[in-house]
Length: 384
Ligand SMILES: *Cc1c(COP(=O)(O)O)cnc(C)c1O
Image (cartoon, rainbow, N blue to C red; front, side):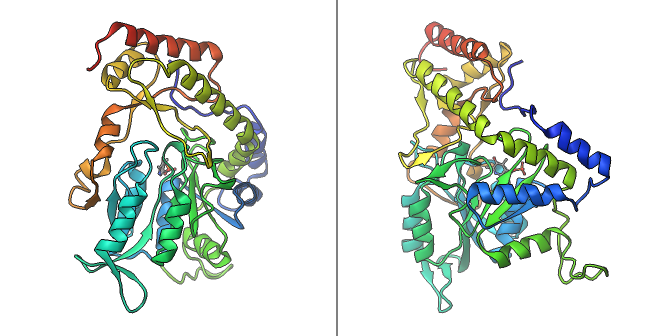
């Protein structure tokens, strides 16, 4: 089986994890946690980084720290992995789901702008209120879908104008930049994931980055049960057990050492696929904004034949997956606000297919994959 996006563990992982095991520093205190945080902060150009158990709870904490409360609204794209919207719900808030741009597959900023200027007003405290429901728009949660970068400059300008904080879901976009600046470093806080399928992995893990020292300190506090005294068990609020453990951070340090080579390989894979698939059938690629230099985490393309192609590739031992079902179509979120003109989310969902993009893919495997896809298009009719 050629896997979709599998971990590449070929560096110092064994050495650093063994070091934790040898010294007994396996849990939530240890030098690798600090080292991993320092590496992530330096790499993304952020002043601070706080390691968490996974990307979902990194998002949860970041939203809480931006003041998202029960009954609030948080703006997010309609096409994302469920974790983004779940994190909003953990705060007791509801999403305002925004349809995507059909080219980049990122949140459509024009819909966001229309919502903020036409459907919302500012109250006496300077808060943005959704006029129809009276709810506060507490945060905007852009997602850098598939490692591509959302229209982040326009989004942040718009957010600043309306005085709404931005938390970036950069869980798929470690190493992606926009005008040379790292995804995750544009908003008040940015979140990363080190789940097994991401560009680097700690098995499971997450990170919050921010330039604000108080927010970083608060994030560390909230993720460690809000312990308020170094010796006594005194806690000053309801905290969470969300802190990454040293043995996983050790893996993270080793993976960070390899990140530049991983990105290089992802770019080669992307280039190979684009070059060899561009003239096949009705295939269309995700558009990348000229300002963006992205990590090409997971190669995904559009074709009306995606269902039969999915079947063919998986039968041939080439692990391939459909795109996420749009959030507004899931039972938990059907009653939430969905901003759209053309429901592009549905079209993109119905046509997209992700194919193997692991960094250790061999050129021979890439050839096999392209051959299968090419055979498919020379042997089937235009539509499923
Ligand atoms: C992976 C992912 C997350 C969550 O990360 P976990 O570490 O798996 O909790 C959140 N949002 C998006 C878009 C993701 O792809």
